[in-house]
Image (cartoon, rainbow, N blue to C red; front, top):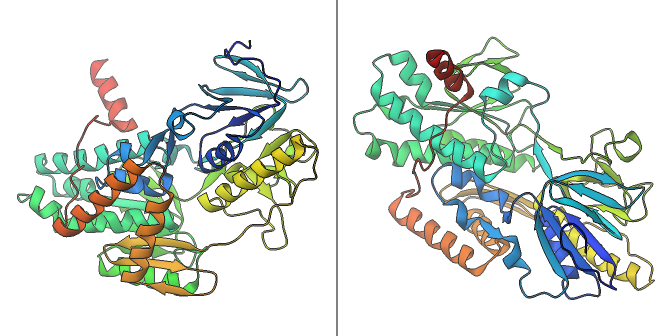
Length: 438
């Protein structure tokens, strides 16, 4: 028995680090095969990240986009889950060091995903808000609602405007979807919740460093999404980079500044690299793990990487596949088949990514969809976006709950989950409270 109480087995042990889209897809592929599968994650749930912005804006409760990892693979023989924080990978001895002990592996799969990339800007990191995890989304939801409560209490018009102003940095799908959701709240919900506050003064600013939003999508999708946002009242700023934030003022590389109590950073992600795999020979210039067409980390035969953390360079994708759910799912399934082939002594099959398209929603009846062969926008695209997201949610209950919420929100033009369950304090408020106590 290891210190994690994983029983000995005659089957080879496959350890998967990370219960995201890639890790879950792989575990499902191996669940009934002749392998002992051990999944390690610091959370006991799988998080459906594409809908985090709906948790942040009160459209959904977190339990409708999270699903217990143990339940995903319930009843499968030879499957073990451990709630653990991985501290180091020792490739020479084939051991993984965690906060609950060490474990030996025959094959290791790194599916640690990505985290928010602040590009070294400490001011934005400490005073801004990220939206990559469920706790972060709940913090953002609390902050948004607390700011409006605070705006009711102040007589200072300048401070009131800052409390009702939002700056979203990054014009990718996350930034666009969050901006659209906030605009709908401003239009349909705030006037009813805060009749004694002039919510028309609330500003939603979406800032993009490049010359168009949704740069990974087609130009027609970018143009249409921008039109949708502007119709909703969002201020779209292009070719501007945010350089610093002190909790109240947003500085840019131009003379344009913004007074806002809420800055949401959605301008980039970076791979989560574990200690032991952070050596130069394993990493690309983009700081992702370098893998071959069989997902093996270059230089290691028994260690694999999939999803956001992995960079498989091909002719079509010289910088690796997009850091999105679909490549991770496909890589997880392919690696599952390959590990079975490896165990059986058969040659592995190289990974070929099937691009199924990309999409983003801007709001009610407004979305953009790019399929490999055709592109469309508007109401039909919005229904397609909803169907695809419902399909990929894990668990029947989650699909039903999300669907009912969406139908209710559509009919009533409401977001019932605008609750401050756990109050959130920004860093500058914490500093102020500490000074007062001293």
